[in-house]
Length: 275
Ligand code: C2E
Ligand code: MG
Ligand code: MG
Ligand code: MG
Image (tube, rainbow, N blue to C red; front, top):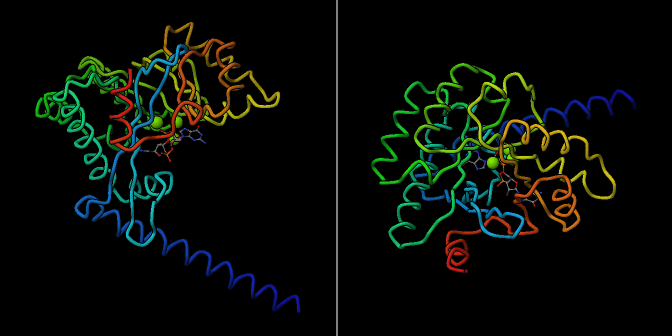
């Protein structure tokens, strides 16, 4: 009896592994052709200050797979990174975002800074900065229109290289934001050396703010930001109570469902037209 159950367990486990392997293959295959099949899109999530003025937006990648439907980026970005497909996908994001920015500018829309998520694999390319500069020139977009979001853990693979490149991108006018701040290897020593403008408080800490959760981490992040003269923004703000607590702690920039979900291009343009 026990033996049979055990064997069933192994069977089940093997099936689960096969399913997972199959899903990964399906994602890898699909991702290879996603751009040319016109399945990729960018959504834009507005960011606000304490007076609820629009101060920027984050571009978030969306993938509509013909059979799997919307595949969440947390699922396909890691696959893209493991397979090297991140370069094609990342370039699609850069091209599309710059095309969109130049189009907004041509329509005389005063777009706030647009934040792009950057994979450490993209930054690691030796020619990344030169390519980026060429891209900006081609689209007639100024670096000041952009923020680049990178994660701490990604940068630590080759810190000196990241410092050099982020410094060069910053000299092109871009702001550098540390995404999901506090979830990785936070060390003040490396933070001091990094060319960074903004810390993004991870949504897991913002969640803690409900119902008397732990505030120490956010307090520390706001302190670090103040001491190092960095901006600080909270992501994943869903409830008014979180907004109030963040304000009390000294965080005055927000992104989250309380203010706006990520918007389609059309919705975002309508939002830009609103006073
Ligand atoms: P992220 O950069 O930390 O983006 C924030 C995520 O939080 C987004 O998930 C956003 O939709 C979600 N979010 C926004 N407001 C709220 C809220 O109030 N509550 C909750 N629970 N979530 C909220 P999304 O779009 O699924 O993206 C997940 C991650 O995928 C991103 O995390 C980012 O790491 C990655 N990603 C997205 N687009 C790109 C891209 O173009 N390139 C790269 N390399 N990574 C990307
Ligand atoms: Mg981000
Ligand atoms: Mg984040
Ligand atoms: Mg993330």
